[in-house]
Image 1 (tube, rainbow, N blue to C red):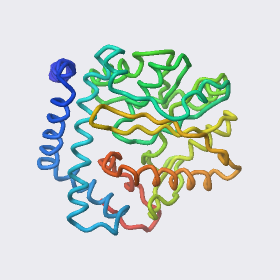
Image 2 (cartoon, rainbow, N blue to C red; image 1 turned 120 degrees about the vertical axis):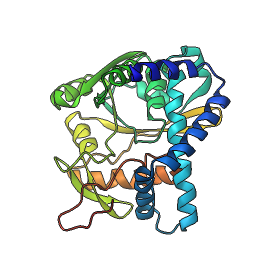
Image 3 (cartoon, rainbow, N blue to C red; image 1 turned 135 degrees about the horizontal axis):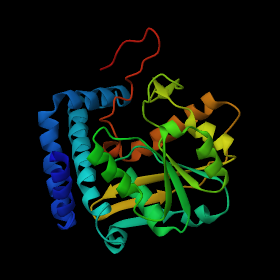
Image 4 (tube, one colour; image 1 turned 90 degrees about the vertical axis):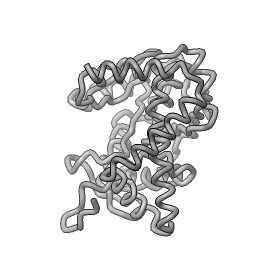
Length: 288
């Protein structure tokens, strides 16, 4: 009941002016930064590992900004998943090499965990007459799970695969030119992960970007979403012409290196609340 009431209120918030909603998000993010010290320490640890050159004050400011962006992006789902297509298009710009996506080529869209990742998916499925797939991680709360699935299935020709569906149907769809929106940059545990550097620290990383590109005979196209004062910019980058190779570990290292370059352009908008280094190599000290 509480979840349903919360989702009803969130939907209502979507009709507020964007500037009001963003101000509420900034306030909510600051509140979360204060009242959830355990998660604040996760962000601070991630930033200390990845940005050792920053001063304590700089990391503190970046931590607070990260909470604010996280909360703002969460509240933005109120209009992203409930307002009209016209409203969304007025707030979201689709930029870059968009036309290339219409080429009849198997394509994996590399979509890292920036706070606007759901905006990127919505912009593509709303504005392009193409078929899209992604891998859906179920939510622990049934009401929230249904809400997230509804939001991601709202526009276009889309399919949400569950992890238990396995690799085969995803590869089949990819070879049939259904664009795969893939988010492979989180810590999914030791199972099937390999340790490759992320900002110089060994990080358990699933080599799924390399694997799907190879199995699907697909190109890899990064799609990066940036929050702006006016809404969001979703940029389609040029396809990587040197990916994949025959070495999945080298490919996954390359992925992390290129992800770092994207993060460095907007570090506060990355998903630092996640325990990226939770899974450790044998003998390595715990970080959290």
